Amino acid sequence: MSKIFETPLYPYTRSTDQDAAEPAQHPVIVVGAGPIGLAAAIDLAMQDVAVVVVDDNDKVSWGSRAICFAKRPLEILDRLGCGDPMVDKGVMWNLGKVYFDERQVFGFNLLPEDGHKRPAFINLQQYYFEQYLIDRVRQLQAEGKPIELRGGNKVLEVAQKEDCVDLTIGTPDGPYRLHADWLIACDGAASPIRNMMGLDFVGRVFEDNFLIADVIMDAEFPTERWFWFDPPFNRGQSALLHKQPDNVWRIDFQLGWDIDRDEELKAENIDRRLKAMLGEDIKYELEWSSIYTFQCRRMDRFHEGRVIFAGDAAHQVSPFGARGANSGLQDTDNLGWKLKLILDGKAPESLLDSYDVERIHGADENILNSSRSTDFITPKSEISRIFRDAVLDLSERYEATRPMVNSGRLSVPCTYDGSPLNGPDCDGMPERTRPGSPMVDAPLPNGWLLDRLGSGFYLVAIDTDVPETLEIDGVGITGLRLSTDGDADGYLHQRYLGEAKSAVYLVRPDQHVAARWISYDEAETAGALRKAIGRSR
Amino acid sequence: MTELNTTANIAGPDEFYAELLAVHEDLSKAESDAFNARLILLLANHIGDRAVLSQALRAASLKKRDEEN
Ligand SMILES: Cc1cc2nc3c(=O)[nH]c(=O)nc-3n(C[C@H](O)[C@H](O)[C@H](O)COP(=O)(O)OP(=O)(O)OC[C@H]3O[C@@H](n4cnc5c(N)ncnc54)[C@H](O)[C@@H]3O)c2cc1C
View 1 (tube, rainbow over the protein chains, first blue to last red):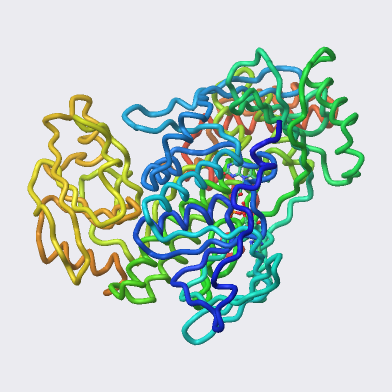
View 2: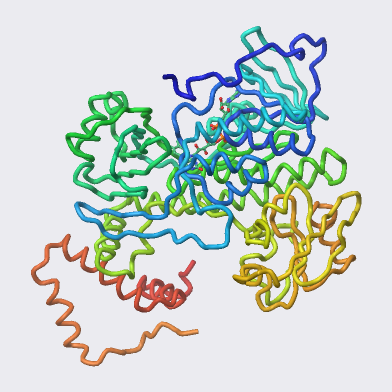
């Protein structure tokens, strides 16, 4: 049976653009149909922005790559109309175990907080993730939304013109040209666009190799994340075991720096490693194997004129913490509404500067966290190994040092503290929903808070009144009135009121808080909205 | 805010010092290093206060104030 990732899902077909005398002009072209490019395109198409996605490939991710998807990206996918298939297929897990040498040091529970529609994490193969995004593209096309996916289209050249980006695209029928008002480069960590434009991508190289073996097996192991430091079957290195749907298990062996890649990737050598780890009688089928190395780095700026970078093209982290695809989705979440307002002439082009500010803030946070995990997993000096081992030895016996054990700090969304788009805050209200923060989900009498928001500005009123609709400088705002009367478990109160008696939140289309007050005031709201769309400082 | 206590605070300083050396007596260099690391981590957890811990890290580096940063 052929795998989904071996099946062309968007094979090359000839476009009429290839026969045009002059390059066809498109409002937005997305380069790359990976998770980030697809999400960006879906977001824009849902807002009726015509978008063309080009990719030199025509299949989903080869092998699984990313497997852990966090709550915030799932919420973003809900907004994009494709959260359900991901969560229905995904594997839910909460328990993790840490081993050191031959011993289990401790186990932990992610203890997801109640009162959220989505779980803290699901495990899902990246190929399924991309497949469901492509399903969503097809659904939007059936609804008549302006979205096109062109496989076998490889960007060969890119040039910035005064008022557009000029692309040369290679196809099986030869090259053709396209013009875009805006180009979104989601062409991955090796970003050919970034290279063609001569832009820097500097950071820290980690001298380490990791072998991934995704194996299909009927194993009795529980649905938990197991992480080994210095185990007998992989001395001096680490290892990871984690479950994916369809009985696929992710096994990750740290190999060190000086290795022979071809040798390590031989089936008999992978087999030897798996048997040392899981026992001689283990029966499995190898679905995918790969050796990866990584870097932690980002671009200086995330947009250059009319070319905007998102996902791995803009920033790269180690896989520990599952921050790659998760943070890339937050890029597109941040970008979609801003680009729509600019294209509609409702916001100045300088609004894109806030994309850089906010998402560089996010990238730096991810790079910091993932570098720290890497330093714990692979100590860089004798003394850092002494401390690392001391933490692990103590953790077997005492709770005290367990929070220092770092096998990856799992992705959480960042708060855009200090963003130029943030408006006024209000004393006494909860810290976690301050301006810049993503809205925290909460159960409502008939559904979930986050399902009521997104793809437009909202004024959320709790125990007070706001207008049903409002228009400021051509930008619509929808009022949403909520009451703590129906809030039996007190989630709305805890997450949005704190010490305040009532609250009004101005919420951006990406579900981040722009400003908040005790009660509604038209002038205050107008001021905060103008700030949130970059029309005033 | 609590300040790092850099005045003498241990009753029976000679006994404490002797006890500290005694635990290291039969340890190899590697075992001693590991022991010291565990001890630092336990004591740091006991103190808990991040500001005090940072002060202790500065104090232990023996830098003069004007050398800092
Ligand atoms: C082993 C491993 C484990 C990981 N685990 C996780 C995890 O658990 N959670 C997580 O969130 N992230 C994880 N990641 C990271 C995640 O896989 C990436 O962050 C994610 O794939 C980035 O998506 P992207 O769309 O930016 O780029 P990509 O997925 O790399 O997609 C880029 C696309 O651009 C296309 N392209 C490139 N050049 C051209 C061109 N010239 N013309 C046209 N098209 C082009 C490519 O064909 C490709 O389809 C992991 C990564 C690895 C390697």
